[in-house]
Length: 130
Image (cartoon, rainbow, N blue to C red; front, side, top):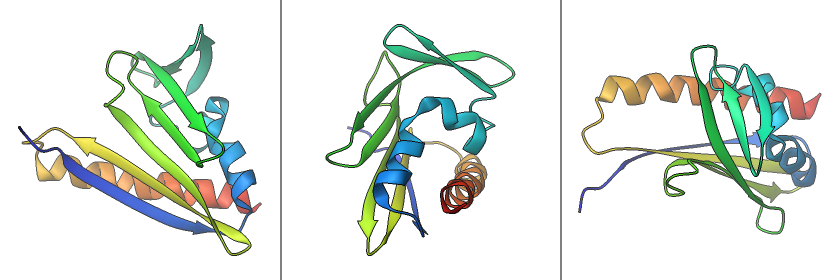
């Protein structure tokens, strides 16, 4: 069975975990912190439509406040998407972000996505600490 390439990053945020969770769990905030993925967002039944400026993408947002998880998934394959978690860290929090790439994905594509993710995490921190 092929193994996916895993890209995981986290960032410490000087804001309570419940506030960070509320921010990242609301898909309407995606254009604020992930504008490359979503220039605009609108509900579509139980899913959400993200317009990235080139195409519309349907996602399922699966959240668990109890576990601090916010997953942005393909409605066709819930194993595919972005898996995130907000953890309490003292009086602040830690926001963890994991993305899988199919086996054989070129390293430069992974590196480019890493740069995007690091910018998105920094933006989440800035917005949540404001």
